Length: 218
Image 1 (cartoon, helix red, strand yellow):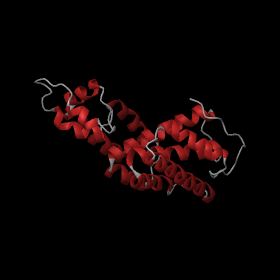
Image 2 (cartoon, rainbow, N blue to C red):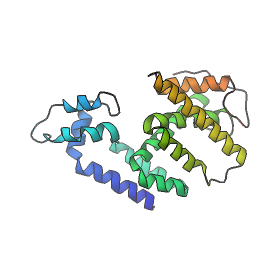
Image 3 (cartoon, rainbow, N blue to C red):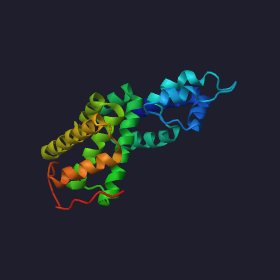
Image 4 (cartoon, rainbow, N blue to C red):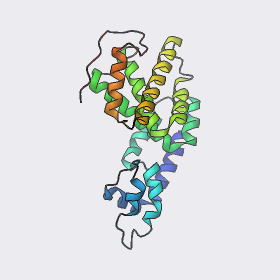
């Protein structure tokens, strides 16, 4: 609960202090995280009530989290058993923790769409870890991705073979994201294709294979 409190205070105070400017930024249609976000944000029209909002463009472009996500984050933290290492990271990097959660949510949804459900130790499990690590790599960078993945896997009491499976697939997902980012071809669809191709070529570690690898569809 302490971690939940820290995240809530940090994020809610950020949104409360800049409510007018957040509305100004959201209504503009400028997309956070894009290469030209700062420039586009700086040219958004202002009036007397939003005159100083352009001073917050760097924050919105680099660290903005949609307030609609806050309830989901709170439920996630409150209902899931966090490892001590995760709690420490979330308290230190609350914004990046939100991005890590959103990456996991996208990975879970992608797995459900392609495999029909999220299972354990089979191809869907390998795919899910590949996707989560790859999506996190793009959202928060390699160093923090490794930190969050390590914190998530440690102290969960999972059998060693499951632990090794997850680590191997996490690494492959990060490597794939690195390649796509270097080639300036990264998006979720490209990462999904990489994950399924890796499964087809038996590059991912799977403890209990079903032998079924779906074709990529969107």
